[in-house]
Image (cartoon, rainbow, N blue to C red):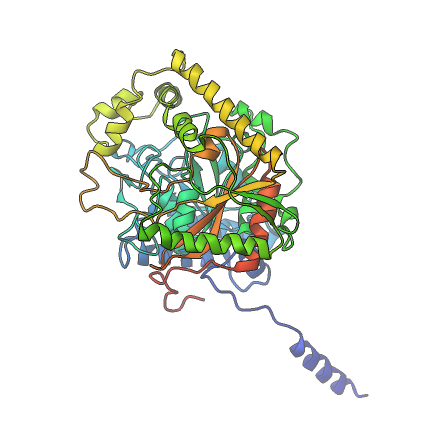
Amino acid sequence: MSRGLVLALAIGLAGMRPQPAPFHLLEASIDDVRAALASKRITCRALVDLYIKRIDAYNKSGPALNAVQTVNRRALQDAERLDAAFAASGPVGPLHCVPVLVKDQVETSDMPTTYGSAVFKDFIPQRDATIVTKLKKAGAVILGKTTMGEYASGFIGSAFGIVRNAYDPVRAASGSSGGTGSGVAANFATAGIGEDTGGSIRGPAAVNNLVGLRPTLPLVSRFGMMPARPTTDTLGPITRSVRDAAILLDVIAGYDANDPVTAYAVGQMPPSYTQFLSADGLKGARIGVIRAIDTRTDPSSADYKSVRVVVDRAIGDLKKLGAEIVDPVTIPDLTGRTLKVYDGNVFETEAATDQYLAQHPNAPVKTLREILLSGQVVPSRTRVLMGVVGHTTDEPGYLQLLKMKEALREAVLKAMADDRLDAFVYATFDHPPVIIPPDAMTRTVVDSTGPGNNRRLAPAIGFPAMTVPAGFSAGGLPVGLEFMARAFAEPTLFKLAYAYEQGTHHRKPPRLTPALQGEP
């Protein structure tokens, strides 16, 4: 065979080799980003620029989601630095050039941290939160800070106004990590970080057709995060897939001497949470159904029935995918006890806030009372925060609260033991997200959750919980299905949630934020 013919055959065979699939920005996963960078289908700078263009197009105009408060204008420089590092020696870490949105409750030394409040609109901390340090070390690009309910509650804040749902902007994006939820849903970044005191990761994830994980409290450091209630505050991922949540948790979890509670997590973490992602993960699992936790759930309403159809279908899918279902699980006075434990905790906030602010010599105020006396906090948040002023953990009522919390945890564990349950499942919300009132910014009382809020149990007893997309109600609004397991049972949650996700594929991007012209 002639040399020319051999060369021609070699060229022909090379042309027949499978070529990498084109990179699509819309719904891109962490794996998609890593593969596109590795195959040189995109550069880090180009990727970051594409996301910034989406924020510019949809955050303040179009559906005006108001999900991102501050875009990191140094992000393009960070991307160029990562491109240079990649060319020289390969990926910096497991999140090399993964653009991440971070709730504005955690400190960033290179852009403002406002906690959703105009009081802190010009405040730039002199340090990064531990979670930010870990993300950067893993190679992530902190693309921006997301809008959040002022001082970690609700969906409005004096620093930014109102954050809106990516699927219906007249409705709430839930709180208080609503900006992260709406932003990740609208493909403003590859992944996001939220904070969950009483449901602030899982709520925004559920109403924005996303995955949201509230980890076991000691698993992720809160250092550099303004507290709300230290015994229930935690940080976690908000993503478009279960796998992305596992990858993100691998990076942010672990012991941090600056947050001593994380010492409880030592020895409780697997090498990687991704090892539990099995499409067969539901086979043989025993799951108990909790039908309602919120006293305001209204089973007679059309809204409830529309959501219930989706949830009942999801429970049926769990069975089809191999799970054994116990329906319903009965725990004596679950609703009343949960609300007493969660709503009764007025004791921690003031001292925790004051201690946190004392760490910042350049903070504009030094106490919660100064914040409230500023007159800049939205009225509805002022009213609620006034209820914690003057309370401390030295009060006898706090001891009673802790006793009730332990009794509730014991009752839940007993139910799991009696029925040999691996986890519970329930609707994150039994009703659709609330319609935003036109005077929300000036109202003294704003219903930020609406009826049917089932998120309180996990934080009340310190258990991890994960919400995943379950489909859409008759009105086209996302419905979230939530799994809850024992402390440090994140591997169980990932196994169950991934199997359900892979068996149903309910994630769909919002119609209001389509691909831009020229976007890959």
